[in-house]
Length: 108
Image (tube, helix red, strand yellow):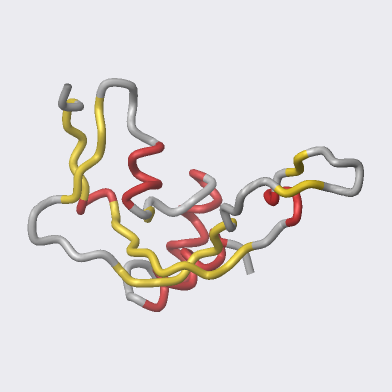
């Protein structure tokens, strides 16, 4: 199960969407508008950032995250990134809908 499937199942289980509604949204937009804070920040336009509205609580779930280990040497003595090993783990995260975040100008 990948992260998109986990988010889909979490949204349906939390009652945000019915399975049919969620399928239509994914078909139309490619994903549900439900992201972690980091996910919202990646989607913000230059010069702006998303902030969680005061008093809002995310839906707790676990998504796949790649381990960040130091580089290691392979048999030829070259440094090799661990990212190529495909080591992932389930990390706790909170998902927020578009109604729970606000786009604001970045502070300098």
